[in-house]
Image (tube, rainbow, N blue to C red; front, side, top):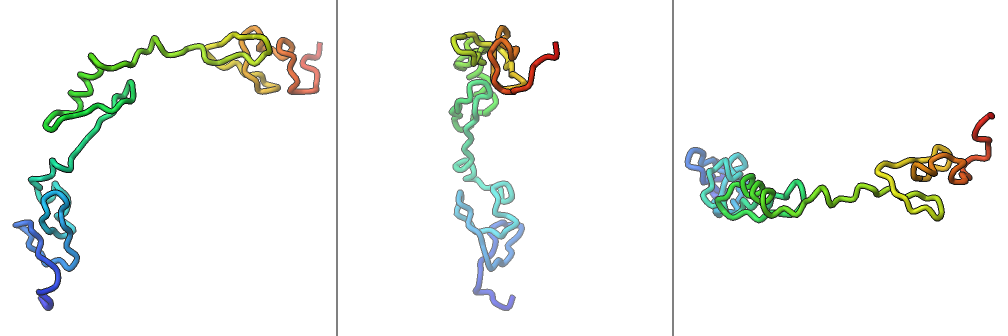
Amino acid sequence: MELPWLGEHCSEHTCKQLDFLPLKCDACGEVFCKDHIRYDDHKCSSAYKKNVQVPVCPLCNKPIPVQKGEIPDVVVGAHIDKDCKYNPAQQKIFTNKCLKPGCKRKEMMKVVCDQCGGNFCIKHRHPLDHDCKGSSQPISKA
């Protein structure tokens, strides 16, 4: 205790350590040492002001507002049960468009040509069917 006028004592009643670099809690305004600055460490009575959670729906990826005192899991569950706009039936399944000029077919999975790397429908998947220009070597030995 050579320099008692420097620093401040920790506000935690079990600590009271003289700290030369005291930290002020942004919720309650009390001064604490580095060991008691977290809300849980000093049992901050004003932590609820800073503890704001905005959970996101895992299906529709929209933020779900949660009121004070509500459990986020319960609120998200209620959103999924009645308000969620997610509908797997509305998602596009056929998204892989054929690159053959004039063809408008779409497939569920990518069908990639080994020679040119283009994405084609089942009908045009072979290099001869889509006039492949990816390789100058003959396609078959027959």
